[in-house]
Length: 170
Image (cartoon, rainbow, N blue to C red; front, side, top):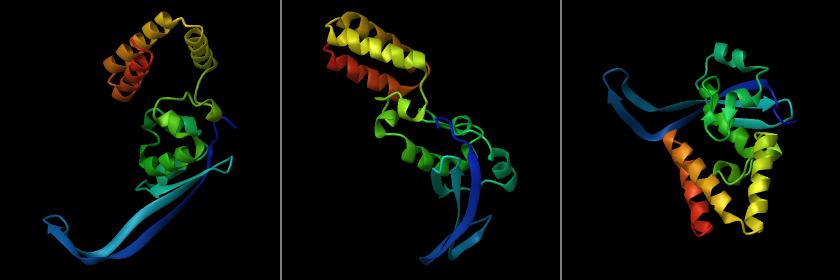
């Protein structure tokens, strides 16, 4: 299943004690020794789960039930505006679905359905050109991609492209 939907949300509050009382401020006074951390576990219709810190409201939780993972999370950017209240559980779920190469911008993510056929075909074509020794076109494409990524402030993608360019010796 390429783009599963969120089918359930479970809530819990982890409680514990600090070794000593925490500081104080004007709004809360002394924080005390008690620690209460709200957590949620999201489950998708393909059985994947994500667990983590979550301060979402009941209304926000109800609004994402039935929503596709792709509408809540972009592996290249992180949680979308709709998924932001569930950022940590979504990262956990995504980490279980995708390889590290996707987050390092070294993989297009075909195994989890986050790339288009066109992007995959372009990557295959660039690999073929590279293996045939036709580096000029590949280098120009990398430079164009790097420039576009830098202009839109996607620094990690630009850096990955720069490394690829160095690898090709240009």
